Length: 458
Figure 1 (cartoon, one colour):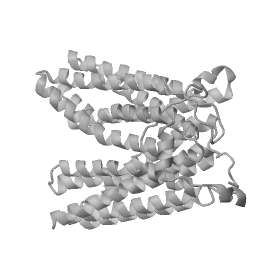
Figure 2 (cartoon, helix red, strand yellow; figure 1 turned 45 degrees about the vertical axis):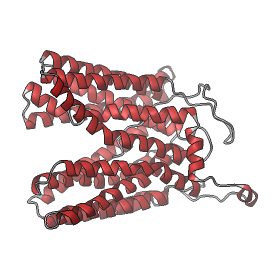
Figure 3 (spheres, one colour; figure 1 turned 180 degrees about the vertical axis):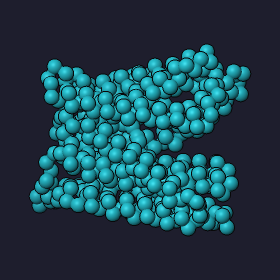
Figure 4 (spheres, rainbow, N blue to C red; figure 1 turned 180 degrees about the horizontal axis):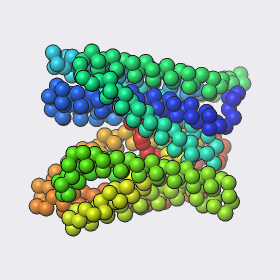
């Protein structure tokens, strides 16, 4: 590429705007429409649960989307196209939700289409955005870049939820469609502005090279990537760690309410404490990376692999604290433990994302999109299963164990074990030394540090 120079902070912030736009549409679809179906339309909560699970299931297409961008060489068209599909999906999902009030079967069918389009849009745009970050952000900035982009996405969640909530009150179907359409249109326009001239143009290969180059099929590319020990182990790590990460989401507030008598407002504030901890953990990793780049004696602070492993172990310790609170029934330090859990999750997340960016270019050449898509698909499946596993395990434990505190403690203990297993998996992964594109991957080479990804796709 011309303009293939490393991204500065301004370019990273522009990609953060795209990620915020993606999050704005996704949060309106997965959260606001969820509430409308359950509260205003009095539909079973299972319906939006299935629709949200569908949008995760569709993201199994991420590797295929990544392969398409690998073959074309440019990521911008896939990001823009994905945002267009995502915006259309958000509007279609809102239209389906409104239609449920008068024609439930037709409305549900249209909502299924809308949520599927949302999943496809997130797959195309989110995967290519991460690949662009991975290819253009230098090592020293990866932790900070991951933090900036993900914090901007969280800001997109918060701003959209606040403004949409304001304009939706008092609720009417017309307002829902207007807000959904406006958010999608603004998000797409912001994406176009942010990406303008950012990637540069692709330089065509020499005629001789183009004549001899044989582009692999998707199946061939996926088989090549899966045969790489680092990529395969990292995929397993992503799935296990994200399953542990997401399983706690739907049971923390019920735990506080059932065991310690927290009111709905108090348990919501507890969730806010956890999110505050996540942001603190993200900032801690970014600050450590900046110090490591500036001062040679502190280089160990910049180890993404170290932050990933340490974050997983710290998450397990915080969950064991919740186990102790559940068994003893003593909730005095609950907020501190929840904040610590959030901070550990945030640290592990940024270390994982930064390491994902580093590992995307390791192995067979021109497979960055397939690798990133494979890891994104593993994360999406884990998030889709996480809520079901967490809530299902808590229901089963409460059925088998008389004490609610002990029942929740059992589930938290399982999640802690999953985080410990994730730390072991992360310890076993190391990036191979740089090799020619055609050289086989050496699974024993001990090159640079590794980590794992987090969310956050939506």
